[in-house]
Image 1 (cartoon, rainbow, N blue to C red):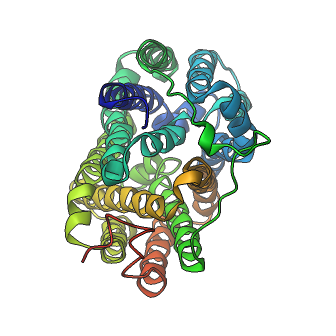
Image 2: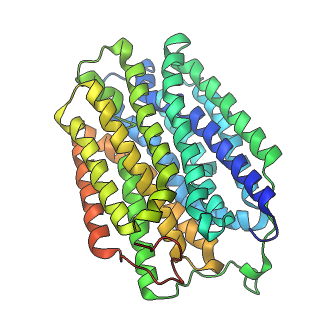
Image 3: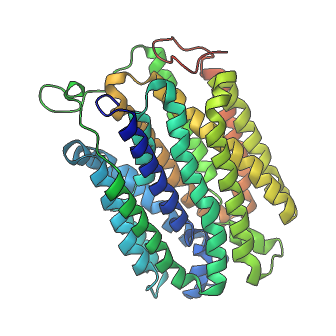
Length: 411
């Protein structure tokens, strides 16, 4: 970013990526096992457990997306660092409170409270993209998204061990400590870049998002839809995976550990996908990369549809996670290159909203589908990914004007 120099830019990227890694690891210590926690709180009907899990997981990103314009104005006045710190502080407090609840609705209420202050994960992607030069945008986005994937790669496995050793309730307190560490990292290391007056209108309001051409606008809207669809499928596992494994015959005493391994596998593979996207975009244009990774992700869901053994499910989650990771970073990067320079903050805010809406709708939709059939969650996921692949193939242009997309259009 202009006026900051390479040192502060790299330091800020490391700080925000480190905070994402720690925070996401802390979140996934407990949230993948929310269905089991509801059982401990007295729920018995699997359909009700899946529904409440989906609602509880989905309400926070849904409210975050709804409140994004308000928090954007707060960021204009106080900066992004303030938004990230207030979000982390909220999670420190609410995770402790979740460990003290006695009724299932208490969890939902606390997730609603988190929704008023959450969103630091998606905000971090936008911050990384805004801070990086255009030719390093994919690398910056990939770094933060890799951190967001590596945290969940470790979190569920550690959480599964902790759930057996100290119980799920006590694991919420450990999760709070993770968020405290992330808070300190951002507070001490992250330096808020100076705002550029040129990016403001005379009346102090942010500039309107105005694309150079109608084609660029169409590409942006399409990629917003792709990001929404990818998040919709990627986060559909959470409310149903432990229940699905129980249907396959996994012993109840091993459910947390087995689910943790699968969650960690998909997260680690996704992190690798985020990391290698920059190199892949140097060899293939976004349309080809998105088309084939969407189909590969759909193939990764097939073993879940047919009820394959757990060993094959691990392989399937690795394929699925890697493909989703590449597709997500490629989508953000391609969209970033069609956003006008003077409106990058506004543009990435819209991309963030698309991501958050996907995060919100996904677990809720999974909970509703699970009342019909748990396997229907994976069937709908395959169909969604196939539709995304077709959309990209027929709508996304192979080439974008050099002024709009200078580094990812090469074939």
